[in-house]
Length: 181
Image (cartoon, rainbow, N blue to C red; front, top):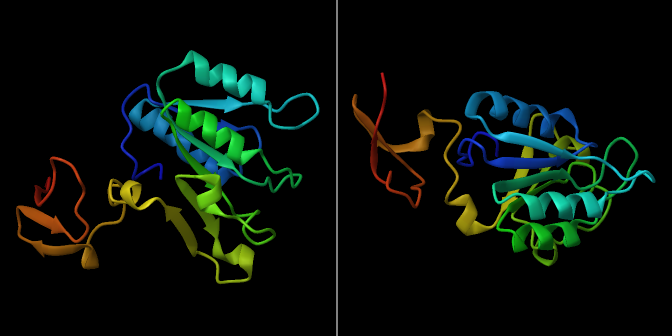
């Protein structure tokens, strides 16, 4: 997501203080690379999700592009109140991605009921092979993602000057895009 969702300088990505490095480091890299702001919602004193701080953050900023949060933490098994968080985020025009690596193998997850935009999980957490994962996304949002792995089977046609990707994006860059050298 960090490499496929289009971000502008000063877009804000909000995470929690419970994130695995797989959902922390990419946002730190994008902050340095693209100038996004990575903001952390710290837990309440009782170690639960601090809904008050979160609502305050959402109310103060218009630049929140994405919430990327662990659904169930690997540290202590705490599950955030995802449905409520997603509603607040959507009310403020932000997208939500949940890291479901810990929740998907251990409890039913209904992405439609949650109304989550993206849901990622690791296959090895479900006794599958390492190095594999799943990304669920609402169809219209998946169509907007930029490819982050290119070459080989990612294009339908190419020349020395441009390539036509198999999955076209709904943007002004449809069709053959000029490749830089």
